[in-house]
Image 1 (cartoon, helix red, strand yellow):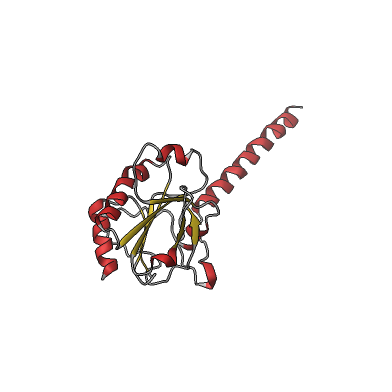
Image 2 (cartoon, rainbow, N blue to C red):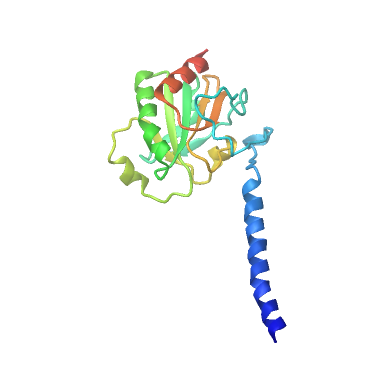
Length: 197
């Protein structure tokens, strides 16, 4: 009788252990997502948090970002190819991400300082847990905001679950910077200067 009770206790313990091993194993795998339109994907390590002070080279540098069109929260459309000749800065953020919210004013200031030369698109990453319109109503940002519902743009830029992430596209449509981590206004100015060549 005692042996039967012991066996019954071991079964849930073993199942729990197996579940923990599966979860740990899934978290260790790097998120690899393909680029759109048949471009080659590169390996991506989401554990690299990319402090802005490091000299780590940007991922996917030198590749052209495929054209896309997305509807902004104000109802307008943002089409990447409409901005050829300008530096395009894409910021992946979320309302629940404290560093993301803290750096948003830098992107707004950047676009205002470079009117006509720089355009900023702030993409809220899924899943959306808050009302974006209500959040943005409290601010007077001049940058374009959209929700990457299908994660198509995020997949094209290998965006992980670690936010924020910023990508800079030069006037010819080439990705010149794509990195996880919060940025300062000074860093954004430096990135724009590099993108302009």
